[in-house]
Image (tube, rainbow, N blue to C red; front, side):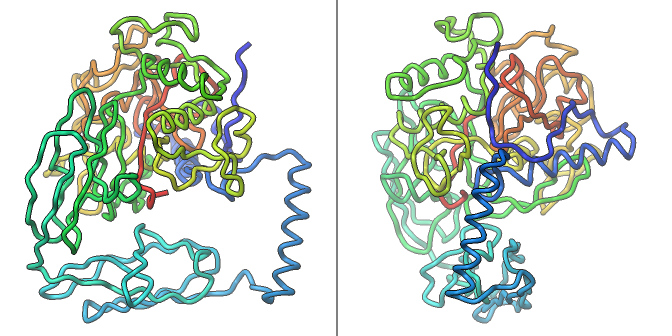
Length: 487
């Protein structure tokens, strides 16, 4: 019997496959939309978003909560739940932004950037000395517990800086003198047997950079052992359509995604290393669907790994991070920084702000899957936030609803012969990502998996599909790596 995973889940779990909403009833549309909202709402393993439900834990947490309340009342005075705060904006001569009012504990989405003639906006800071940059699209009021003033920083629009490139053993690149804000992620060195993974301001790879800063700097290349693609620019906010109801969500760019689903060959290599370094797994993984779990990889077949649980996946990603000299992301809990190495460690996992490998959140997955480079609108492309995105009922990469185009981009029931296929056999989407729809569905960090698989009908291989299951031959995953500030 296959051991069940113990991923941390949403309290509401869709129990069936979600069909294409284009021809669905209004009631079914609402059910699908709800599943998307749940998956996208609980998408990172952070404290407060996931919990186990056994009664002893509830009692213990209740006692702990009451104790904190009592101590808080005694030491600091009670903070009413309906207390409201003001977020003010000091734009230093730029366009005026009216203050925002928000409730205690809420997330506040930052407004559109201000403008100032002759200058370029360089970010919001929490202090007038410009030392603490707000590096995300939202502010969590719990970080402040008081009224907040943000200060706009400006640099002259004719400012130029010199970027020196240290390729860390890769091909040499000459320094560039370029305007502030110029994209440098397109400056790519080469190195044998590895793949460029972005520029950093330090050799410990904590501070990612994708645009020219306001001062001249040296940047350092990071090298991955497998190809990854950059999704958007760091410190840039994208308005991304989500789900079948096409609501939008503000998303941070600047994260990296593997161009293909994780192959069994890579899984086996890392798992073998992990077992020798104190890691344990529930399942050994399968080379596609034709071999015994844990067997030696078949030569040059490049099949996705399958029959792995969510727990297996986050343990493996921690092992990959440690193997590559990065700090593992998944920890025992928010209060316990111990690295998750075994299933017993993963009862209440937390994704912490480290530079290692991880899964995408459900919303990040959808952003990567919907990305297009289209410049004109048609019936199957959506306009949101000044960019064009693939509609949710289509496969990733598609620009029209034509059947011939469907079979170009995905393996699904109509063309797969009900079998898994090697990665890279279909066309990639605009980011260079293969099989975002079909072949195997992919675990995301909420414990769901996205994208449909080789045995699904077209309707449930589309971008809006969300599932929650244990290890199967239809489920794999895709590696991601994110700047520390995006966690």
